[in-house]
Length: 338
Length: 239
Ligand SMILES: [Zn+2]
Image 1 (cartoon, each protein chain N blue to C red):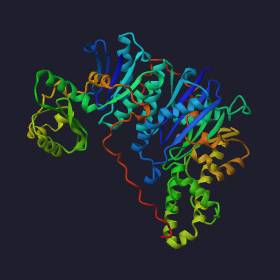
Image 2: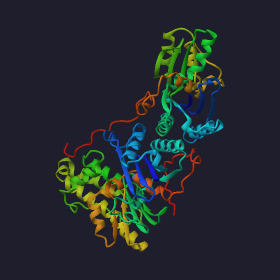
Image 3: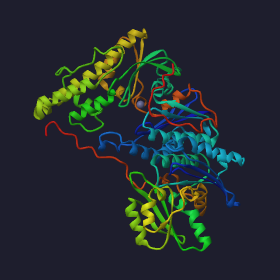
């Protein structure tokens, strides 16, 4: 039995997973640190300290849940970047040492390629050989860290169709939630509050007139800030649900609109979505109304996880021992491989 | 017993391999970043370790004890060292032993003092940035100044209070030479080997431990809390 063991530590979740050589998900362990909320955002130094304390135990847990040991592992994979460099380095050092100790090859994986490769995972007996979705398709990645539209023609790369020019979609959700007095992380709380509100009560800008397929969420955030200020504390509280619903509507529309345009431009009829924002209910509903095939991985494969890194590793040129001993992490930049 | 030891608490990456049947023959490989260059911990540590093992025909699985410097020192460097040590231990049957980087820094000078029958203490000082020093002191084989993070003037006062003569070593001793010399410390010349953390010393200290430590208990000695400010509670629109 040859398994892929993967680690992902690019932000504040310490993740390890085991995937079979043909892409079947065997285990997916995500240790959410949950210590950053009081700081109103992820504190890199705290995230790095926790990764170090959790990484080995999370690997043990992933192996145990896969009913495997390191003897069954034939390839180690790890997120090389982009992300918080101090956090990434804990995963890279851990993965390199595990691979080196056992003389195994190592596959360095790009985090965004990982999100796309979540779609290639086979989950349980009822999933087809191709996984959740096989290329070619358009993929929307939207999370607190990235907002990206990608054209995926092959298993080992993608081309960027559009990206955010300012805030990421998840960041916009968090900032909007903060303006409405909701605690960090605000996305899910804002979605809950919006359930009782009217999405058409307030008109927030959707950045329709932006060229190409890029996104911008700075305008909608500023617009919410002014609206809350104009209403004053009492009225803003009274209309909190309407504000949340209208704000969410604007973000969902901006994302959906670009997906529609991307599908039209590429002539592709299949759309996959990933990233934490893919868990947003109204976004899912809106995209499922498009007249195309929509693939949405389960929530735990949309947010940051190591299973997606293992999945991407199947299509990466793995480095044999000892070629990867000097491998370093990279903090920024997209590696559009196609 | 084969001991593989390393330290990444200072900008240097130091790796040593020690066989306890010939402890004096321990081999060491180091990487020192050039002036203005970033530390090479991420790219150098495992490569140097593999190189050192290869020269003796050994593999990672032949190591009986892994020794790692726990700091204090640069946070990212410490994590690369400790993560590497923990993961090597996880993937082999090697025991894991964490040692104080300051103690490893002091050890060669301490041994020399002992051999010479000198009665000076050894103060190990690492530049902690932001105008502070990480320091600890030993005299006659006993720790007499516990690990601290202090401004150099305060450290000098502590040393003066402690009394006796002191030899101060480490990049912090060079950085804060004036303060420490005023407090009566003797400091070797700038180029002296005594200012570098020796991975051989890390191995030797680890050899003294009766047994390994549970993996998940081996964590860096940061000596400083992370820089993080609690967010002000979000303002409710109603308040
Ligand atoms: Zn992500």
